[in-house]
Length: 80
Image (cartoon, rainbow, N blue to C red):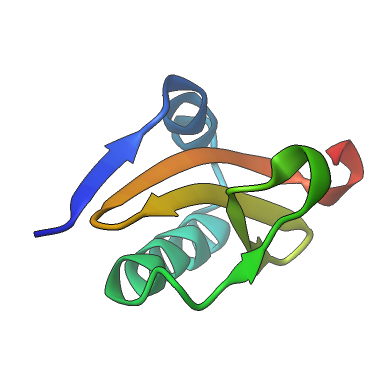
């Protein structure tokens, strides 16, 4: 069984999205991650241990260990 956890910062960011088309894209990517969490790109250096998915000019950051997915943040690529 897969455990899904959301960090407070992630929940706050998602709740502030007003563009419905972008919100659908984010939900679609979240479903893809839940279906197959090992596919997206591994991060290096300071963000080692996390993975990212690109959604337009934003990045959806999460961590995956064995049977647990932790959604960390959704941020603009310029804030990396």
